Amino acid sequence: MSDRGGVHREADAMMAVALEAARAADPDDVPIGAVVFGPDGRELARSANRREADRDPVGHAEIVALRAAAARHGDGWRLSGCTLVVTVEPCTMCAGAIGLARVDRVVFGAWEPKTGAVGSLWDVLRDPRLVHRPEVLAGVRERECGELVRDFFARRRGRP
Image (cartoon, rainbow, N blue to C red):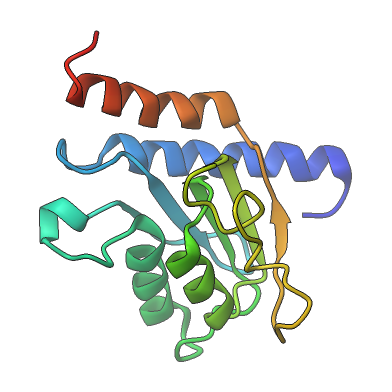
């Protein structure tokens, strides 16, 4: 992600892949998608939320994608040089896992004012007390990412 215009074009293209992942979520899971791209820009792993589908309390899209990417990346658990793209601002659990995995860049779409830990409620990833602080690009395709979640909850509540 070099020049400003290039950064946004690249982030937009990567978010399109995360949106595909979100749209493929199990109908009972909140449609959040995450994709890990390697240092060369190739996709290493993608996932949607899997909490309901797998009955897994930590089955967030970011966690599932990080695990799969670590298995493919070849540096043990470290995802140095990698970019994580997620449709919604990561929660505290996911932000912690992102930092511990040594991801270099995080790109997210919609802000999450109730649980967000990359600037909304907390800023876990950019806390100066931590050793590893990834670059963060927020608000990429924000409206589109937010609409997926809003539409999901409107359907759940019986609204059109």
